[in-house]
Image 1 (spheres, rainbow, N blue to C red):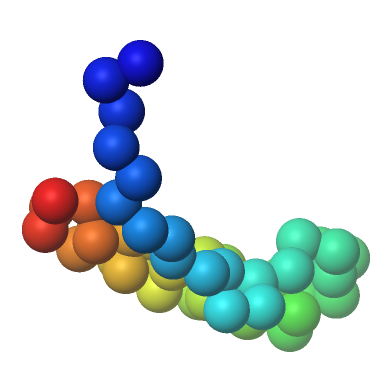
Image 2: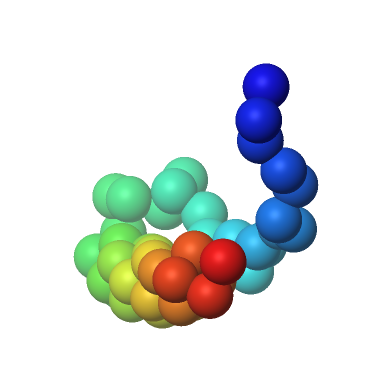
Length: 46
């Protein structure tokens, strides 16, 4: 299909289950942003 495997990038435990607890939601947002930054760095290095 013209695609090549470039590796994987784990979520490092980001869980979307605790959205009702404000502290857990804030932690989820922070960890999600950190993951997004790692993902952007990973993709830009390809």
